[in-house]
View 1 (tube, one colour):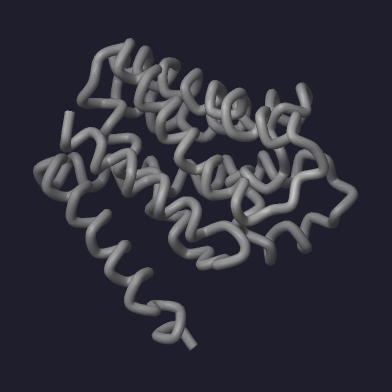
View 2 (view 1 turned 180 degrees about the vertical axis):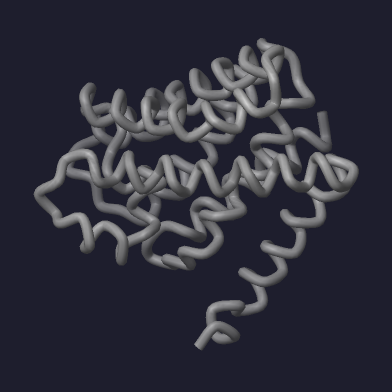
Amino acid sequence: MGFNLLLALCSSLLLTCAFSPIQFNILAYVALVPFFYLIERTSARGAIFWGYLTGFLISSVMVQWTSLPSKGDTFILMFVGPFYLSTYALAHHALLKKSQWVVIALIPLLWGLKEILELLTNLGLWMTSLGSTQAGFLTTFGEHFYLAGPIIAMWVALLNGLLFYLCKFFMRRGSIAALISVLALVFAVSGGRQWLH
């Protein structure tokens, strides 16, 4: 349970650092690696629980950073929004019985579907979309293209999935997921943004 909690914390911290106001975009490309490992090492019920907890942790920080118009929006973002990540985790876990290549191919599609459902039901706010971490790509698509966020989110999810499965095929899964998480956290906390300029 302790290692699962560490993985959930790592993914949620990395993802929140990829969003505004920190907007350390590059973290979005590794932030899901610990979450994917978490889904793979748990049961179906565990995937639901850890998916919800990870979503709740992300939402809790996002609520602090934004000024939402009503308490209802705050409630939706914090307590209802994480169900989407929980549902994604369950679907991802169910696919693990299939070929690894099927899972790799379906990760971005599942993630994009999750984000489209959030848009259609208005329960997911734009600020929690994985696509919103990549502002440069969003401006390329244009602000009037409704599905720009989910399409970019699919790309980011695909890169996370490829990175995870490359690590899985070439190294021990637990150690590499933990290593990526720790390195990314150290990079983020130590002001890694300054190293890129």
